[in-house]
Amino acid sequence: MGSVLIRSWRGLGVQEKLHILIQGSLIVLFVISMNWVIERFEQQILSHAAQRAEEAADGLINGMNMLMLTGAISDPANRTLLLNKMRQSDGVRELRIVRGDSVIAQFGPGLAEEQAQDEMDRSVLATGQTVSRHIREPGKPPMLRVVVPFVAQHDFRGTNCLSCHEGAEGSVNGAASIVIDLSKDQARLDALKKNLWLGHIAIQLILSVLIWLFVRNLIVRNIAHPVRKLQLAMSEIQRNNDLSRRADVDVRNPDIGDMAQSFNALLSSLEHAHERLELFAKMFDNSSEAIIITDAEQRILTVNPAFERITQYSSAEVVGKTPKLMSSGKQTPEFYQQMWISLESMGQWAGEIWNRRKNGEIFPEWLSIGAVKNSNGQVINYMALFSDITRRKEAERRIEFLAHYDALTRLPNRALFSDRLKHALLVADRTGKKVGLMFLDLDKFKSINDTLGHLAGDELLKSVAERLRSSVRQSDMVCRQGGDEFMILLEDIGSTEDVERIAQKIMVEMSVAHRMGAEERVVSFSMGAAIYPDDAADQEKLTQCADQAMYLAKESGRNNFKFYQGGL
Image 1 (cartoon, rainbow, N blue to C red):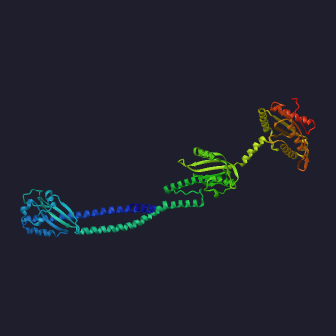
Image 2 (cartoon, rainbow, N blue to C red; image 1 turned 90 degrees about the horizontal axis):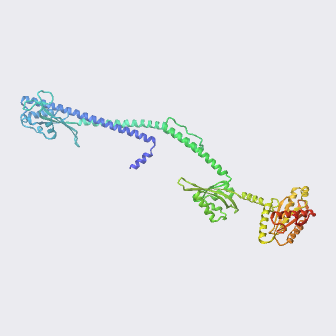
Image 3 (cartoon, rainbow, N blue to C red; image 1 turned 180 degrees about the horizontal axis):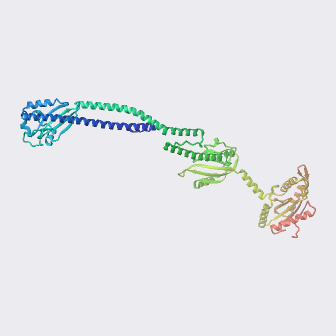
């Protein structure tokens, strides 16, 4: 029952609660005041009844004094007559004489009404103090019994008895026991209670209406109306998604004003957070890097447009799945194990990985993964950012290529050729075999550039490079030293005849015209060669010897081949 009342009370509005509290307080105050009025009225009734009893006692003692003066007090009939006369007083229901010990002889034969019958009588005879008792018995009218003592005095004022006996002045000679009927007084009291209750109900109805109007006006003016304005502002902000709007602050009600100020402060925080979220959303959508956000179980929650562009998977195709969908199979299980160890211990990992697009194409990417944790340190999300580094890898390969190869002819450049030559000489030292080094200079190349242009010259150099490559062995290396000069490294040669055969093959290849656009030209080489270790004992010396041999061939009429003949 109590829980039902508590729920009912909690379900009421502020207006109803305030009205109930005020109305209940007034009812309690009215009941208390009504009980006080009734109690005062009851006391007044009892006081008036006690006064009537005192008056009846005075009349009785005066009558008894007269009987004593005439000597008729000892006749029971006279006392009975006196009692019957006094019983006719207003409200007297019962009247009897309580005889004291000191006047037993003077009274003569006793009547039933003159015998001390109860504790009240004996108390009054002993103390000389008036005693009263309000009698309320079920089914009977209310009564007030008053026992008034007869005190011996020499004057005739008040309740007294003549000193015609041996008793000393002030002694108690007897008492009058009077029972006053309070029926009429109770009827007036009941009428008063009824009128009070009727008045209470009428007043409560009027007050209820007034209190309701007062509370309603108070609530509407100070609470409901400001709250309604605040609610309308909230609804409009929600409907228009306009966080820049602010609620009006009602200064008449400090509580509502504080609420509105708190709401405005919350709006400011939300507006700032919304601006940041919009910024993050733009960054998320416009990022050139692919972004994946997963839950703690690695299920994909969302991806950005860059992810769709790079992987060719749409958002709908990957949400709810794991990134294993794009696995290329190129990474080993140990690779992923180390990656997750780093994520668990450091909360992040970054590195190069290979993934697969929707069309099956495998591509390289640079991947960064971060663990997002809550306040308890538990992982709730993972966020991965990656970019397609295919072009970067191609650029790296291009840089690597340009560092060691000629961009035009795609032949090894001087740096790579020098490293290869150094290695070949070391191998030759260990095996005891020979190494041949050829220098080649394209005859009259300048005239081709001057007459046909540099583009034709470049086409010629590429054609010459292809023929040189086809003229040597798989283990040999052809290098463009620069301009129209080339070098050939011949490893593991048995004799000078091996070098001569390659030189002759080159001459044969070069005897065929080269096509350069619409033009065709036959060109030749001036070639020189030196043998390691026959002609030189180190790389630098060997290079000089081969270069000298090439100039010797050029001086001999071009389209010629010469070995180093000494002289350095």
